[in-house]
Length: 338
Image (cartoon, rainbow, N blue to C red; front, top):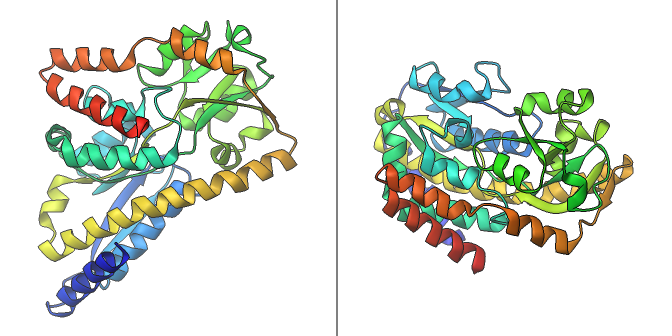
C-alpha cells in the first residue's frame, strides 16, 4: 500500500510539473475546534500537504473555534459561500445530514478507534446515498476525524448506575439524550465551548469526553473523575468542501486533494491514539482519578437503551431512505463484530 501511495504522489507531482503554473488559490476553512487539538494538528498537516503537492497552487487558511462561525453555523456559512471549507460535526445538522449524523451520534455502538476508520471508509464507498445527501447540501465530504472514546467524566465519582440517577449529563443530537434518560440521568445540551463553564457552574454534573480533549479544554480543572465506560465513539467531525469550490479545481488539483484527504484520515487516526496515552499520564499527574465502572452496570445501561439502530432505520424509512439506512447498519455491525 505504501508503494501505491508513493506512486500516486509521484504521478500527481509529475502532473503538476507538466502543466502551466496556475494562479494561487486560497481556500478559507472554518473549524469548530480549538487550535490545540489533535483534530487541528491533522488539519494543519493536510493543509501543508495540499500546498506542497500542488506546488503552492492551493493554500488552505484555517480559522479556529468560532472565529468565523459557531459550531452550529458552519453548514450555513459554507452554503452561503462565506468559506470554501469547514470542519464540522454532522450531528449539529441532523435534519440536513441525517445519514452522516448517525455514526456521529448513536451511542454505545463502538469501542475501538480503528473501527471508526473502517466504518466511515466503508460507508462512503458502499452507500451512494451519503454522497447524494452531501450533494443536496452543496458540500463534498473530504475526510473524517477520529476521537478517543468518550468516557464518563464527572465532578464526583460515580460508583455505578444508581449514582447516575438525577445527574445532569451533557448531550448532543437526538440519540445521546435518550441514552442518558435510559440511565435515569437528565440530558443537557451544551456545545464544546460551554463545557468548562457548564461543569464549573453546575449546569452539568458529568460529560462524555475523551482524555485528550480533557487536557485540551482544561476540563480536568473542574471535573476530576473519569470512568471506564464508553458512552460514544465513532467518526467525528468531517472536513467538507463547497461543491462549487470543488468544481472550480482542475482534475489534477482534485486528485491531489483526494489523495491528501485519504492520507490525512490515517494521520489523524494515529495522532488520536497516541494522544490518549500522553493525556492519560498528564491527567494522572494532575490528580485526576480513573474509576472502574461495574461491568454489570455497563451491561445494564446498554440493555436499558432504546434500539438506536432500529429507530434510525424506521426514521429513514419514512423519509424514503430505508434501504440506505439498512445498508449502513449492516456495515456498522460487520465492522464492530469483525
